[in-house]
Image (cartoon, rainbow over the protein chains, first blue to last red):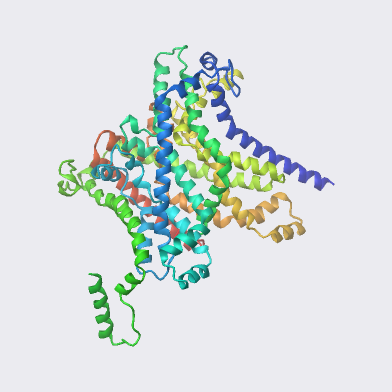
Length: 286
Length: 322
């Protein structure tokens, strides 16, 4: 009996601690959400915590009325889509041939690719390389340099290797060439892995900020992250110098943060399992 | 060229004097797998243009780089750039900061997902477990720009945490404005962002533990904690070691987005790290040679650390990263 009580006690304690962790994960979002829906006066008087005060949607009207913001969002969606498509093609083109053990030069090539995971030119040589290729201030500067992640290529390669070889052999005997085998047999069987890798690429492109900061100075080509960075930091300087209560700077900042977060929040719960499975395939050494 | 190689290979074989087993020449292999080689062209061009070409550009660290002459034609400067950075106190400061911040991530950030994974593993209500995991993974999917914005709003002197503290009669805490407090903030924000996501590999390792081990431990009278200590932890030992090596190997590597979006002018003494320093010196002030030299120093140290930690782990009988 006392054993049972003790067991229950441990169950509840573990649940309680996890609940606190969940709470800590959520509170910052609730805070930003309530700020974005509160009046600026309420925010400055520090009355806002995890629910809005003087509920209003003025800040969102400003954010959604900002053509630059919407443009940036739209542009980043297109950029991400193009990037994912190209990255997927290049990654498949590397992963599939490298599964063939008979291929001459396979291990050398693999080694040359793996080496780039552990050693790179560094930020400045990368920058000068983009500059020499005349890619500064073009969308290509945000697409080409990351178009194949060696790590994701290995993930995909391990998945291809896990498919039964007999299928490919049968197709080969039926007269299919390697390209037909890839298109008709390997890729259709690899849909879950392809979905995972696409999502990993998409999240990378959506969230990555550094390359846009380094390579893009033309405002028309700002990604949503660079745009948000400027909104967050410029209004910070403004509120530091002359606090204007009528100017909804704090609420605006919060609404901008929500604007950048909501797209992720919308897709994330449905796609979560693909990310988890990606981590798992990646953990199995190829 | 390819044909020459294959005939050279044949000649060599004949001269060795065992032509009985006819080995196929390189040309045969290329012709046989021509489609596979054609596929590889695109990734190989990519790797050469965007990974190896910048490595060729590293030479500017040893040169007086002149934009008009380019990397190849600029004159060598007899290690002047390295002498310059090694005599600069700021260089040592950013190296120290990088090591301190990564070291803290190792001490505070590394155990956090392990503890969280053990707690999640002990949960008995499946639905609750699933929902908690979904929420705990979430911060991993936010960009550092957004996290930086959230952190500023939450922890500024007028932010929610400080208004709660003052409401309860305390003094405001300088989470972002005092450099010592900032280091703790940086580290805890990292925990917030990564602890949930970091549990995945540990949880996967835990599901792989043989249930009979738990039953046997129970039969021996082990309680909940004894089972965690004697079954769960040993079960995830190799995962822990592997991830530890990886993180130890990366102690000199630091990404750009996280420090850049959390740091501010008041805490640069502790907040300026190698990546942000290279950006400021190299790109903002166009001092390319210095930027490249600092980057090269970092890359080389990184590689040494990775190779060493991999070697040690293999000596200890664990899996290495390669």
